[in-house]
Length: 184
Image: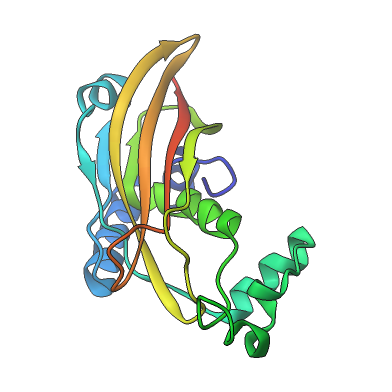
C-alpha cells in the first residue's frame, strides 16, 4: 500500500483534487480505469460489492524478477536462469508467486482511494492463490472487489479481493483477499 498510505498522505502532499485528476489522467493514458474515490468511512461501507479497476498494465520483465530474487534470496532457476527455463514446462522464466502477490498491494491504490481518513494500513491477507504463472516479458494488471467492511476500533476494516490477470491468459496469476484498515 505504498508505505501503508492509502490516499491520506498523498492528499496532504499534493492536494486531493490534483491527485485525483492526475490519477484519472494516468489511468486514461495507460488503459486503466480511474480508482474508485470514496470520501470517509460511511462511503467505504456503502461501496461493499463494488467492482474496481482494471489498473493499467504493468510489464514484468526479467530485471524485475531478478531484483525480487536478490531482495528475497530466492534464486531458484525457474525465476533467474532464462536458458535453463526455456526447457521447462513454462518455456521461459516466471515471476515468483510472492512477487505477483506483492504487486497486488501496488495495485490497491490504483483501484481505491479513500479520502477523509487519518490513515490506512495493510492489516494482512486471507486466502491467497496462484492459479497461473507470470512469464517474464508478460504484462499484468489488477481488478478488485470490495467484499466486506466491518467496524474496528477507530475505523473500518475492508476485505478487498484483488485479482492479478496476465495479458492473454484465461487464468489469473494471483487472487488474494486483502485486509485493509482505514482509520478516522
